[in-house]
Structures are given as structure tokens and as C-alpha cells.
Image 1 (cartoon, rainbow, N blue to C red):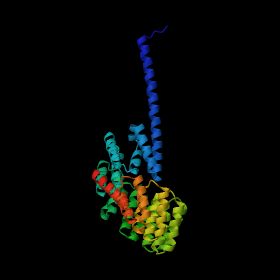
Image 2: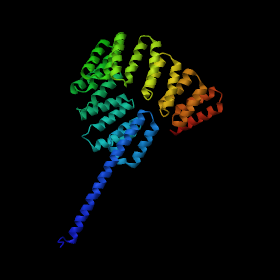
Image 3: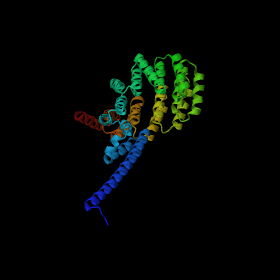
Image 4: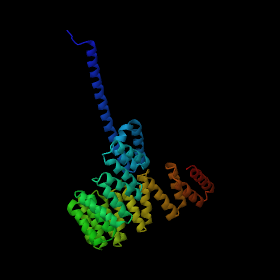
Length: 375
């Protein structure tokens, strides 16, 4: 005989249904988190490969399908920075800082955004705000030291680096900045001592590069080469070590020895965009114009969505080579892929005029004027 009243039985049944519903909702929410994290990781990987279109498509879909989850995931900051969607990133960090006032990540995110935009004053302001609100956050000291070093305020940089080392003795970043400051002063004996501390305490691969740079500054080229060569055996996938070997050759005045090292780096690390930029800078210093053009063309073929790479190629053909026909072709490809880039219209008009396509040049100038007025 069932002694429970109907109302109580119905209440118990409803409670069971609600519990099951909440369980299903929780499982669905957890699955959404895993999916978003996986997709954000794919977007970050695409950005590392300079595949901006893929990263952009992933971000748009995630923002549409899972907007609440995306806004809670910390990986979103890296993706937005990589996409250079700085206003959106700022809005997200400020929103989350209000929701999580005791979490330093979001003020740190605002600091990173300013640094990514190459705005020294705002970066220093935000580093100071982070230090004041969260004195135990390493980035407030490291970014202050880094920016002061970059703008030549070396005494201030030194003070911030020393404070970072005192507050965070187990973190390598303070020691790295401390050593870089000595390098910025071109005080090579002091720089070598500081880099030796980095090596002794942390065995950090950056210590080998910095110590080698100091040895090159002291004209101890053979010692520098031995140090970096030993490091390449331990860190075979760290391309900056191989770049340091090439730079050492260059500093000796051995251009004939440096050029093949840069060429081999491009073969060894074909998916590292920074290798292409480092190599093109080296080829420009050594006036190896054919190597420079070949590297830019390889980079554009490998990373067709890399705006900076294709612009560098267009500028090189236009200014250095004076090959206006080739430059006009590349400027046209930039306009097709990046239609908001005004330089592609102005320089494209110049190139078109140089090869006698005056009507096309006039049309491009008119379009540039229209876009300038609309801006």
C-alpha cells in the first residue's frame, strides 16, 4: 500500500527530473569547455603558422556558438592578440577583471595587450597598476624592465630587473632582463658575468645565446662558436642558437661563411616565420639582395596569409629592385587579400604609372582618396 500522498510523490518525481536535467546541463557545459579549448589550441597553432584566415574562422565560429564559454577561457587572450583584435581583447579583459577582481590574470592581460601594440607609455602605466594591485605578480616587474630597456631608460630597467630577481629568485625572467640590460649598455664583461649566472642557475637556452653575444662583443669569436655549437646539440630545435652562429660569422666580417648558415637555417626550420624575418634582416645587412628576394618569395609562398611578409616583398621589389612590374603584381595581390591596406593603393598607383598603366594608376589614386575620405 502506497502511503505517500500524490502531491508528495509528484514533488519527488519533479526533483528527480530536475536533478537529471542539471546533470545533463553540467555535462553539456563541460563538453563545450573541452571543445572550445581544443578549438582555441588549433587557432593558436594556426597563428604560429601565420595562417590568420584559419584562426579567424575558428574564432568567429566559437564566438557565435559558445560566446559565454569563450569569454571565460584564458586562451582567448592569446588568440585575440595573435589576430590583432586589440579592442576586443581589451573589452574582454576589463569585463573579466570586474567579474574576478582577485585574479591578476586580467590586469596582466591588459598589460600584454599594450605591449603587443608597441605602446611603451601605456605598457608602463599598466605594469605600475599591476604592481600596485598585485605586488606578487611577476609580469608587473618584468614588463617594466623590458620596456625601460627598449626605450633606453637603462637605470630604471636595472632597478626593475633587480627587484624581480629579489622577489622571484626562482623565476628566470628577472635574470634574463638583468643580463640583457648589460648587453644594451654594451658592457660585455658585465653581460658575460650575468649570462653565466643564467646558465649556472637555470641552464636556460637563452643564456647560451646571450653569453655568445657577449663573447662576440669581446671579439672572442671562437669561444662564442664553441659555446653555441655545444648548445645546438642539446637544443637542436632552438633556431635562435643557429642564428647566433650565423651572426658570429657576420661579426667576424666573414660574409661568405655567414650566408650559407642562414640558407641552411631556412631549410632546417621552414615553418618558423621568425626565421624568415631574421634571415631577411641578415641578408639586408650583408647586401645579399638575391638571397633577400628569394627568402621573401619563399616566405610568401609558405605563409600566404602573413600580411607583413607580402608587404615586405612588395616594398623590396618597389624600392630596392625598382622592378615596378613585379611590384605592381604583388601590390595587387595585397589589395585583393587585404583590401583595407592603403599603402597597397598608393604604391600600386606609383608602380602602375612607372610601367605606363596610367589609367590603372588614376583609378587606384581615386580609390585611395575615396577610402581616406570614408575613414
